[in-house]
Image (cartoon, rainbow, N blue to C red):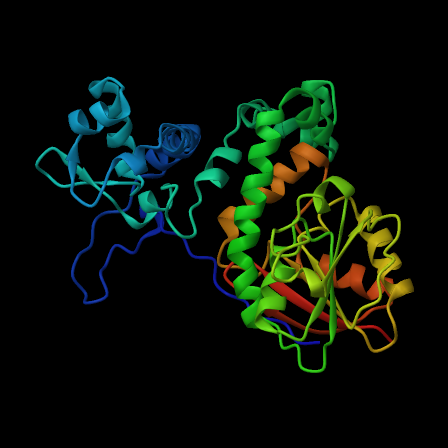
Amino acid sequence: MTSAPTRPVLSSSPAVAATTAPDGAAAAPAVPPAMLLRELAFGAACAGAVRAAASLKLADALDEQPATAEELAVRLDVPAVPLERLLRALVCYEVFAATGDGRFRHTPLSRLLRTDEPGSLRDIALWCTEPWTWQSWSRLDDAVRTGRSVFADAFGKEFFQYLHDDAPDSAALFNRAMTQSSRQSAQDLADFLDLAGIATAADIGGGQGQALAALMERHPGLHGTLLDLPKVVEHADPRLLPGGPLADRARLVPGDCRVAIPVQADLYLVKNILEWDDESTRRTLRNLRQVARPGARVVIVENLVDDSPSMRFTTAMDLLLLLNVGGAKHTLGSLTALIEESGLLLKAVAPVNAYLHAFTCAVP
């Protein structure tokens, strides 16, 4: 087994910035600890400001030319004074920039909130700040004390049942956000995977199948199978559905991988689904081990909380999983242990991008 090199966890916080610039000149003084802790305690203000910008489509209202708050307010049909206060807060986090003459311009971060931006994160920004998230975060101490989800205690229902019954708009947003996230990582995965000698691939719990579709587009001879819950595969990527350009090479199989995996393939892709409780993960890997032919390849793709340059994001998602469903993001050690327990042979671990690692396994 080989593992990706450990990366230092870096922070962009001014509190940990060096007090001496690389050329030896004096740099800006570090932020005092008390000031930094106050800023962290008010972190909800940052998330709320990003949500407000996404909800208002503020980034869409600003074009290539800098604009004043008054000009943007007219475009959005909102009062100018509170809008300027919102912009002022966002500038502190480099979401928009002030030009010095009372105008505001785009930054790389603000562009990602545009609806027409390739790689837009608008839906993800909204999803991570949905109304129910605020109440969930306030109970994180209870989740830490008990080690289990507190969602049902707060809302009277388990997480996905609540979305289905009481928050259909949030459920639709969840689906769009997950599709958006999958679409962005699918190309990275297609670039990463070497499919030499692979004729058939199965995307297990693959959602709408963006990763599978990207692989099939990259490899015209590849046949693919998407396995996920019935309502999910009904709304699969249009490229895989009947009439789509990949339909003649695609098979859509409704099912729950925790119950059975009735699919034969040369390559099994298991991406971002081993985040439930460990017993559910064990069942999934056991089902996969039982159905896969000897010599088949299994590629498990997950975020890691101990070997990633995206630690702030990944650890935040880890805590949100604890709150909502009692799940967890894996460490290198925890996922390795579950893979080895399943009987799969772990061959290599390597980064796919800044967020994801691929665990390449073989079926003995």
